[in-house]
Image (cartoon, rainbow, N blue to C red; front, side, top):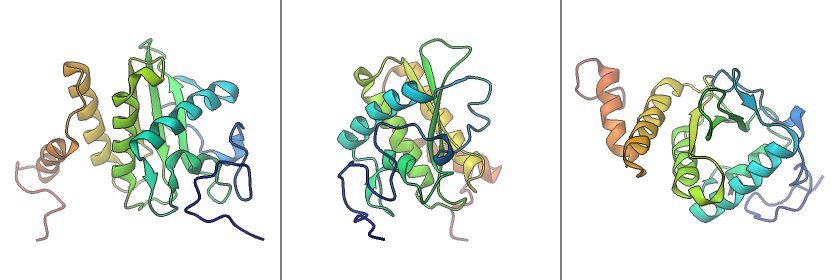
Length: 191
C-alpha cells in the first residue's frame, strides 16, 4: 500500500484519508463532555464548518508537525479514527460554537499548542464563520487536559471582555501558579 507523503498538502481523497467533503462518524472521535449537552454538528453542518476551519488553519498555519499537515486533515486520517475535532452549537448561548479536540494519544506533546492555535485561528478570523465566539477544549483523555482547559477558559474570558485575542503565555504563568497552590512556579519548573 502506498501512503501519501505526510508533508503533502493535497486534500485529494487518497488512502488513508476519507474524501474532503465527507462526514464519516466511525472515523471521528465521539463527542466528549464539553459537547454532549449541546447541538453536535453532523453531516453537512459538520463538513461546512470543518471546511471553513481548514481554510482558517491554512491561513494561520495550524499544522500538526508530527504528521506534517493542516490539523483539520486529522479528521479524515483513517489511521486515527478516534482523533480530531467535533463541534456543537451551544444550547444555552446562541452564536457560540463549541469545539473539542481529541489528540491521537493521551500524552500528545503538541496538545496545548494545537488547541490554543485553533482558538486563535477561529476567533482571530471571525469573518470566516457565523459565530460570535468559538469555545475550545481538549478532550479529558489528554494528560494535561485540566491545565490546558484552564488556559483556554482564560483566553475565552479575556476575548469576551476585550474583543482581542490575548497572549496565552501570560495565562500559562497564572495557571502554573494555580497548579502549585502557592502562586510560585508550577509543575513545569525543573526542580
